[in-house]
Amino acid sequence: DTAVSQTPKYLVTQMGNDKSIKCEQNLGHDTMYWYKQDSKKFLKIMFSYNNKELIINETVPNRFSPKSPDKAHLNLHINSLELGDSAVYFCASSPSYEQYFGPGTRLTVT
Amino acid sequence: EDQVTQSPEALRLQEGESSSLNCSYTVSGLRGLFWYRQDPGKGPEFLFTLYSAGEEKEKERLKATLTKKESFLHITAPKPEDSATYLCAVHPMDSSYKLIFGSGTRLLVRP
Image 1 (tube, helix red, strand yellow):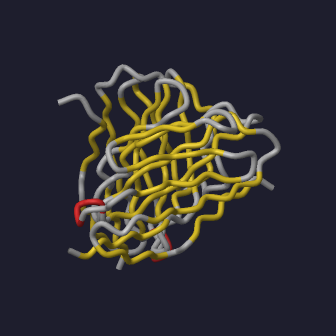
Image 2: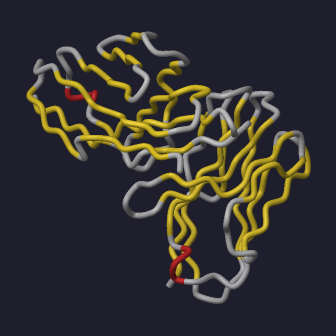
């Protein structure tokens, strides 16, 4: 299936831990994104990469670090997790303007 | 500041009862406006892109329209399977890649 995929789907961890979320797209798109969706369902952009180059870096704590090993993959590493990091994180990819989203990773920090 | 406001926050309809969802936006210039559908526990699913005032797009029971200040998503004779959260997003002219999302309208269609 052509799609945007994310792993894991659920992530439960304790404060202070470091965790990673992986994203892969096989749509052949050049641009990929990370979004955070909070409990009120607001989707807010965090990062964007175009052909492995970082092009959007919103006001996000530097505990969050994206990495794009190639244009089909965009991973998100989070250091020293805090309670406020609990949210659903979505990866997306885009051929031009419209964006196609992955299924999301629900992160719960206890 | 670029902003997107959706109303109502939640909408309950009887099956077959047509209605409209509103998306008001404030941007310095509009490159495009997007509608998405999001089911619980899933990622947003792309529905439509609108680029200029007066443009309309249709898909099954959904029709999206665009003016210079707002967009409407009209739902004609909805079915229970249309129940979802509908998200609106704008792509500002001064941003190559960034979408700004509204908080969505939660639609519940009762049989």
